[in-house]
Image (cartoon, rainbow, N blue to C red; front, side, top):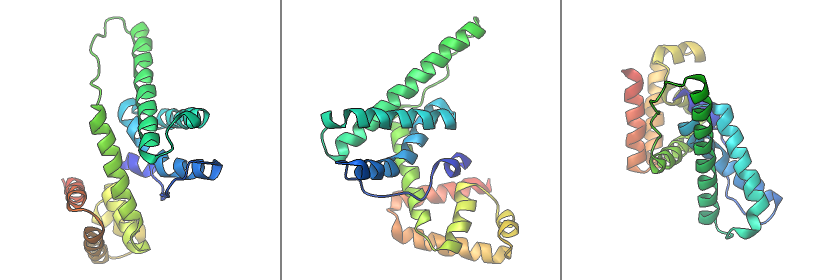
Length: 196
């Protein structure tokens, strides 16, 4: 889950797409989740960022032809990023074919709907964690998004391990009130995974 830290920021605004300010708000709202979506295909953070930036440029050039509602814009962006990501994979396969002529095993591609859902869920979890008070947020990011153990967090934040445990417990209580039960259970699953 450490890729999440490198992709997501605390940007989350509603978009009014009629002008440059609206475009900027749209960019801030969808950029991180689209990068994560593309990353699930291309497994290269920089390439995923390039693909998403190209998708926004394509949207800007065609925005007058696209319905001015959030669902249509979101569908356009996800479709554009998906197609560009798959084209990148195909191109990579062609290049790899020149390098290794006998390699016939093709890597599995993530089902597209699963990739969209994963990107949206991770964005919601990240948004909920970013809404926590500063001390709980720091502990939660280090624990759930970076997968660090309690002792590592205590050392990094210069606090006792008991304080870390109490702040994680309180953060989970706050997150439970902010999140729908399904998202909260996913976060719990992430926390259990970091202890294994």
